[in-house]
Image (cartoon, rainbow, N blue to C red; front, top):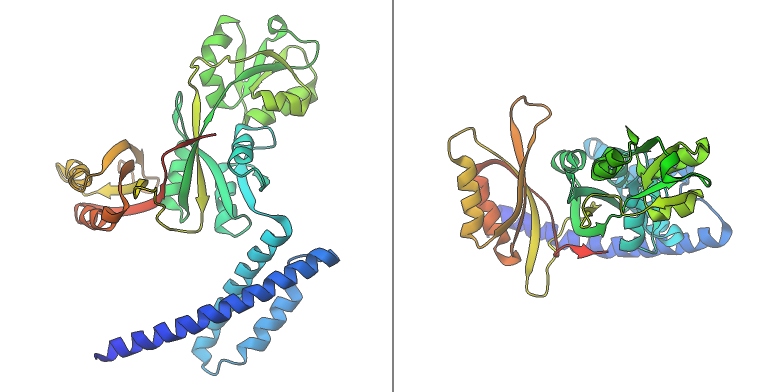
Length: 362
């Protein structure tokens, strides 16, 4: 046996022992969470964490390794806190917007028992998972009328999270106003730009001026607070109930098949299989600046039996006039590794963002 194989075998033995010890440690964390729940104690105990790091670091004799061990302890404690939080508070799911927004509604349908945690924008919600504040983030990736959500696509390309599910939410835009208002009293509406775009024909027909707002639910809240019969919002039926507004008209979006696709982002990266071992993959890649390279990349996917559902390009923010490609392909999970290896030979960069079962309507 080669010397390197001996080292690898020893690491496998150590990893098995560490896995057993990790499980023991997490069971203790579970019991601590139960104690904290009973006694109303917070999850974070910064003073004890600092004390443990200082104490346990003394067990390491190698000065160079000590800093690495401290980083390891910080990571283990972070995982332990996430596990305790789950026991105390349930699953934490980040979304962009406020209660009553379509994103909030999507979370309530995808994970009805989860705690919905609102964030100001897509990046903050995404980073909440990266930083361990939440277990999942639910973000829109595409609307059947307005197209892709470019900011989220860029987060996929530049970030480290994986997608483990994609869900379709049928969106019905309503014209909302304060009690006492009517369609003919509304002169101005505020809403998210996509909601305004989806409802543009209706608003134009009624001579209503539209003003972009950061979020549909925040727009509804703003209208409620202004209490002006000339100002309305384009938002969901649920938002009207939440902020005490009147539904002046419903289904004002141009397309009756107005659907938004929401992706579930997580730190966990794994292949998700259907019963027939077929899954949908989100791939992102860049190609060499040579003639025919994109065609070659696409042909690789076809050669391994993958059908392409979506492909589109996005500009790279740090390189002028250079683009990356977003693709959704469907095929057999068993052939994925071979396909990706072959794709890497034709591309400068290949990134598997995640796998998911066929879109689920919610």
